[in-house]
Image (cartoon, rainbow, N blue to C red; front, side, top):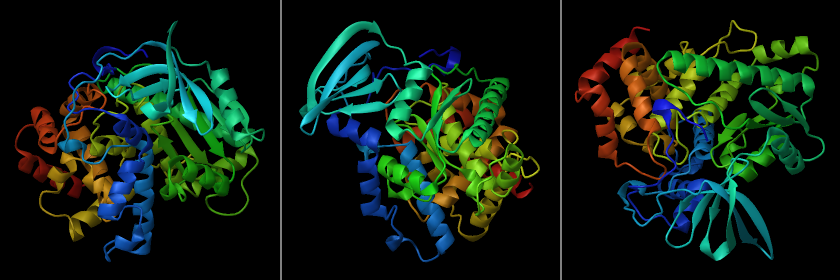
Length: 447
């Protein structure tokens, strides 16, 4: 991949603070260990253990947000307290063919080895951008070639997606995206234009803000389902039950965004004429925001702003995605640009502050992702992440950009402890978090 200036994404895993083995790698790229741990200890993705103050709507939204989060990040439980050593520090930048046992058969994956552990397990990035966790007991062979690593061309990526999804899916290609869909050309072209507007707006906005984003190294894969039930079936199989009611998600494992047809979001029959699409979309601006949110994650993890499989603070990644998603009800597409005031998130944060925000809420947000994994707290965590990001971009923009640059330099699988995360924040924003929190709350209250 090609990265520039301050937003270089390191591919080494030097100074990783614990031993990485097959279980870690598999858990990291699948998310199942984290999901099971959260379910057993916090009631994640299960309404049985939700506090009674959550009404049905908040329960549904909390479960959905957790599902979307699990599709984006897969972190091994307890990583904060673990130590690591004995991991190869340099990835292999040539094509390696790894053959794995799959039942009675075997399958060959071609890509570059990002992480090699002492027990023989590895993390492979395939030429289509997907991550494969290699467990020693599944490994048949590993053959390194002399061919330099490069991503497959867009036509091959599209053909692969079509083969996976079936003959009813057509291929549409834009300047920066490869999309397969069974929703028809009218809607596919509309979505393509929306995604390209986001891409151009994202690069323009953050470059002007002082970041130097790397150009995409591959066209980004998009799957667009016409039917919500077909989307649900795919999403559950790909990322878990919690995504059954989503309208879209980004998977850090596959590097894909998966979406459903928004034209049926308000009920009835989907619009089939170009002039009618906007009218249908106007009825579902928050669904459009979901598309922008997940597509923002995809761009951010492919331009060097965030690092896949690194210790990216959840308040930062989610706050930035929400900052970019803000709906614009005056625009016929439901979205116009990045960074406008998000009325829905503002309302949610005001409710949180008024009714249940405890002392020290900002510290717990900065320390780590526990609030994002707790169904009783995840909605408020999203709202506070947006509010804090909005505040920092308007009152501490220079420091916020510096902090983004610092996080973009993090190494994969190099986990920080909660005190270390606070120290990373204080190094940029200063030691007086109480004063910063007071300023933050006053600013939001005056909006």
